[in-house]
Length: 540
Image 1 (tube, rainbow, N blue to C red):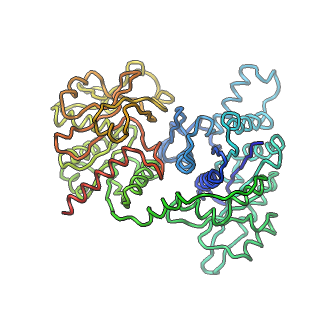
Image 2 (cartoon, rainbow, N blue to C red):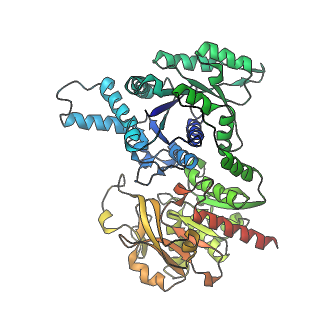
Image 3 (cartoon, rainbow, N blue to C red):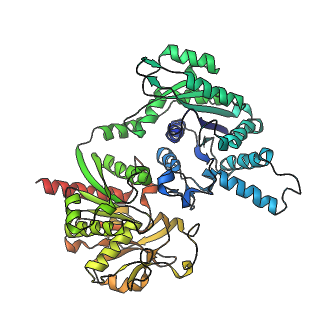
């Protein structure tokens, strides 16, 4: 029988349910269990795809083209399991499905209500992962905080589901805040008690309580919570602040989270094997080198907008025993060649990640020009690849008004443009999304990095390299080295080694979605390797 774990949050939002869910997934996987994580969000958007990054951070993309919450990135990075469309559901998607069924006569004239119709649809989607995969344990994170009006149908659904799959096959984890009052020198348990009481009032008795706290909880505090919250004291798990999110699974294992969950689910106790993970964390905490990487973007006020990019840089840093220090550069602040030199001169490498809209574009072009002319390693991701093409077209190929039709529809040299079948189509839901094949040029930097000629990468974009300019670029030093064979679309460009540049590459896809802490993405690995050599050369 498959087992189900549901993780809810209480007191305040932003306590780290996603990291807790990902950590539990890793712990159970290293015990020999097949684990799948999923998240249910209570907001009414169909998916995060059209949300401003300032609202929810980055949009994570799965192989099958789902635009999802950023927590799915944590799930994939921790458990090394590729997720899918069914791994992230919003209230908007649930309501849309129910209303479409009602319009089609699917309810045969009966009144459509939150209970049972909405909750039934939530439960159906929660159980999809159990039918689509061979997972032993399905871990479901419920977004929001207990007590929120919009979360109520989801809480009711996870209450009902235990009677369908069996109470013995369900485990409820409640993550709450336990604040420390400095003046009183005391940790306060009341917020947790009230949050658990709210959850119990909705029909759910947590099996495990996870305490987000700055200070260690003593035995007296644990016993007090166990008494008032009706859980065993060994099921009171503290979740202390960690220096890195990758240390959290080790801390949770020390707290015996896996043991508490397995006990609640009736899973035989097995030894956890986190030796490789612990070795990775140890390398991360004891680097031999330091690098300064300039990240030139347009959403830097909310760094979660580039969460997977940052994590991928860190993965590559771990591989090279190098601490990555990111210099967050607002693209709009790069207003001239002189200003760009002033702000980027200390960078060992420059990365321009993805984004939409024309804000900050000229600053990104200045950054790319600086990297090319000063032989600083450059990595362009999605928009960053298009910036690389535009900059080279303007300053080397002398197409002074070269641009993307996303930024200037009137440009006479649209080196980046929409495909013919996308003209006039609204933005929402029309992106090239998910996994696409790419054929690499043998002997190119990209091919050497991957070690193979056919690769698959995840995409999330609408504008493409304009094939009308292929011949012009083929005669230049900005080589086209990656092509999507299905539609003959340019996927990777790189500056020829004959120019003397150490490493300059742009990919139309998002490699950050496939990087793992113990297996960094090849392009990030090579970018950091080139940046490290660049720093060592400067230090001589």
